Amino acid sequence: MESFVAGAHRYVVPVNAAADADGRGLAGRSWPHADEVAVDNLRDEDIDLVVLQRPHELELAQRWLGRRPGVEVPAVYVEHNTPRPSPVDSVHPVASRTDIPVVHVTDFNRLMWDNGAAPTHVIAHGIADPGHFYTGDIPAAASMINEPLRRWRTVGTDLLIELGAHVPIDVWGIDTFELNRRERKGVRAKGDVPGRRLMRQIARRRIYLHTARWTSLGLSLVEAMYLGMPVVAVASTMATAVVPEEAGVVSADIETLARALCEFVTEPSAATLAGKAAREFAIAHFSLDRFLAQWDEVIEERCA
Image (cartoon, rainbow, N blue to C red; front, side, top):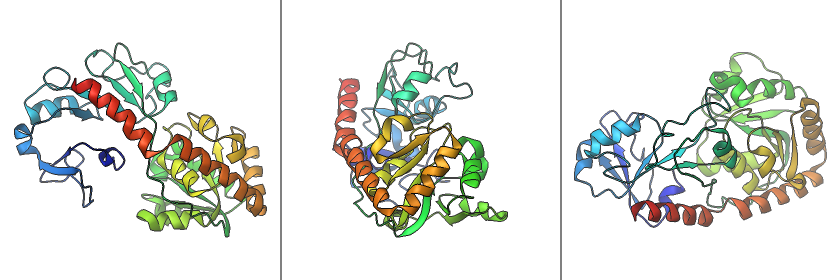
């Protein structure tokens, strides 16, 4: 969202009295091109395009705007997730709509979802370069995972525990302190740390570990590559396509992952070299300018 509202348009972000998941507003963020608008006032806004992200927002947008998305006001549906409940047989919520395109965040997701008749696009993540902060002076792995206990095998929390027996793993993210409820050898919860302070803490670790089994390509992996960190990743979903061989190790074999972690932790020069390749790849493929240019094309096409 931060990247999306960095474009040249005006972005209306709904807010309700509860500031809940349907109307969180800006949540204190300072985004110059984004305006917080109360849901009761949305009918008075001159909306050119509705960006949907959850199935119930079709009805929600119609109720708030008094216009049907895709019929009386242009709309797109951004699909952030891998298909559920089935990897190959899940039908997308707007698969029957030819008037609402689906914008996937990875090629893998577009391939795996049954998109039906809906037009599709892929716009991969794009972020502003956070800077080359990598020092790797702490001989440990870093990982960023939100709600690791609730999401467990989906995000590979069980793999953290297994790999933590080989090298220390520091884990940042929402509800990570729940990992401390039971002693898990080698796994150290660091909590939910905001902004650039988080990036600098992550960048002090020798290696970035990506354990997700069934999620879209996380921004955290892209951010780590931008920082100049070498990567060890589970070979699932999009990871194999975005971590080049010179930037780290991607494998479905737990022993290979453990061996790679140990080698990078004990060989700082190799880690630095791989991290440089990771940063170069991130800059070439996940730039904010490319992201915004692709979105401009979609926005102009729908608004035409």
